[in-house]
Image 1 (tube, helix red, strand yellow):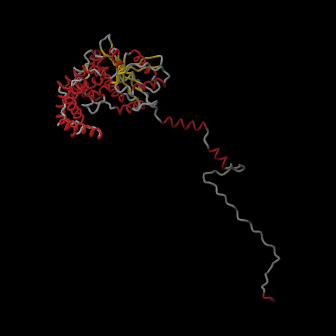
Image 2 (cartoon, rainbow, N blue to C red):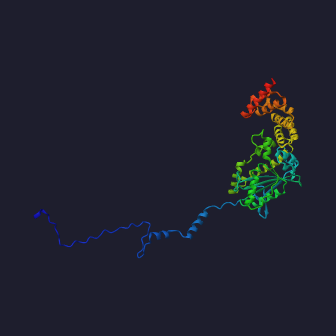
Length: 436
């Protein structure tokens, strides 16, 4: 063909129709085939219809709850092992324990009844609180609490209140305890505490000024109850530190009870475990978890009673070292006559250097320089104490006029600051030169 092109063949025959491939729709195996004449739901409609109804949900919850055993009812402390009985009050149920001690009852070697005859003037001097001197000890209330926390604050609740007071009718002390069976039922306990505090002439605690009383005031406010009137307060922890501080490293009430009163607790619940015991009781109703806490609280309260009897007449049972602490405290309180008497008794009971130091300090305060000089001279050979050397150097310089002896003590060290020490040395050297 001209032009070198290849002709394209054409045909006038009609092109046969080709049917398109059918589209395949995958149907989930679980979905039932729609019946003839029935329309299928959209995915959103199917999701709504698949949710259970409210009645079905309730039925499911009922089946689940039925499988869980119901909790055991919480026991009533007035009907089980715990030594409480129930009193109905206007503010609600009060679970309380009251026990009267026999007149011969003791804590260790100290009778409880000794607190009845304690000298308020002596207690006032040891507490450095003149307000206590006019109080009637027979109307004192002894107070201690066990709480849900050791730091205080608005979230801390006293769940066990321990009280003690003297009963003239039977001639002995009454131990009274109130238990908070459930949180939210503390109003009757607070009302009991308020009543005892209002009736009392004074309050006796152990570290109560820093913890128990502020906590109770907070709980009165939180429960919208009237806060009791402040009363003279004897906090025994301060007295114990002054009297036993030189002898005992730890002055907790349990240790004081052991070392001073002569009673050792066996199986006592430690303070750090008290909170856990109560929380376990709240969760489980296990009364055995509280038995040790209740006895711990009772022991604390009665130990305070015994300590008041001991401190109110210290010459009777305290050892020589503790009497030296009494003498030192009385000197600080300004009663030098009684302080001197205690210092002599402390030496007679083997108080050693502590008693001798107390007697020397008291003699110096009374102006008896000769007595003070003798005590300090003996003391300087028994202990290596810069303060003793300083007191003795002063007496040598101003009373004996022995400047060389004073300078020798100063050279050994008197605990003064460098500037004061150099000034004292220079003055003594000038006096020695003038004397020469």
